[in-house]
Length: 214
Length: 214
Image 1 (cartoon, rainbow over the protein chains, first blue to last red):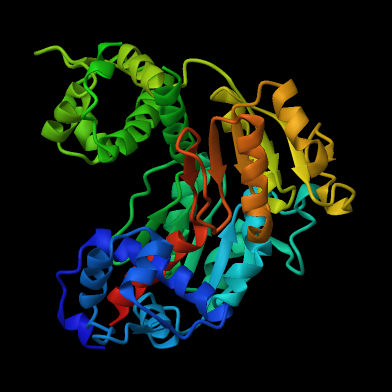
Image 2 (cartoon, each protein chain N blue to C red; image 1 turned 90 degrees about the vertical axis):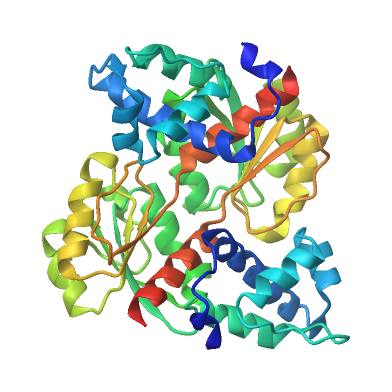
């Protein structure tokens, strides 16, 4: 994977890769084997020149006059994203959002195995519809992570417990945290963080609605 | 609101405003009345000069030697984001994610009223824990939106129905769509769109985990 020699790839480009990956996966499902950067452009909405430039960052998969081989390109981008293998993940916070994530089939299909769900209050009857998984108490979280080779910790617990959970994740040796709590977590540099800011996304929408109205 | 005279505000700045708003709300809750751009910087992680520049876009709320009045700044940014009033919203898709959003107290507190939840299969017993709301059939969606002055349409339905729902939203005169389905919706320009890409967020995390490991 010679793209790793080129460490200049910006975060902006990185964040576009999952979008390419999604569209290429859909093309494959439709039986499309080959696509030009212009056709990709029509589909994704980036310019053809932007697409060529983006993909060149990772070694240039396209061939002049042929375009891209959809399966090859998808597999390469999948490798870049680390999707060529499976990950064990745990969820802390068995509320509605924890349910939604633990039951979402798409994550399982993409190689993410939710192996445990934890909560401050595991006996709460509202937690009963986590499919096939018992909700366990937070006290067992650290040893569970170590025992089950868990690499990803998901935080869907209320914000007042989020840092406490993150600290347990770090102590247990987790590699990345996917955080839904509206808190800026403090983490050591070797633990990667990806925040999902639902309220901030919604407020961006109302900003643009306002813009239209006035 | 004289900031509207300055239409050059970039989308990048806009997307930072909800983050300021969240931190200022937390400061207010803690009883903090006044803050310097340097203190805001320590809290939010943007540089003090970036913060001054961002806020100057909207009319410059700070005073030399005093800093920012937290409540005033929060209220102004809230107005900019359109959070100084309430919005009626509907959800299409009564699965786990629809549950999570309809039950999330933070949205209600911020002025978003989920007035209806709709599904292709409203009788599904798994939809029973949408609190205080009956799940209604999609056939009633359009007339419901018109009747209840609904401005925001949320899509948590599976991707194969997402465009169909969006078309109903548009036809019924909705102003903005908050979309969780992994689909690029086709919408007229006057309808605003904000996508939440959960898988893409997760794949960005695995990218960075990979980076660390190798």
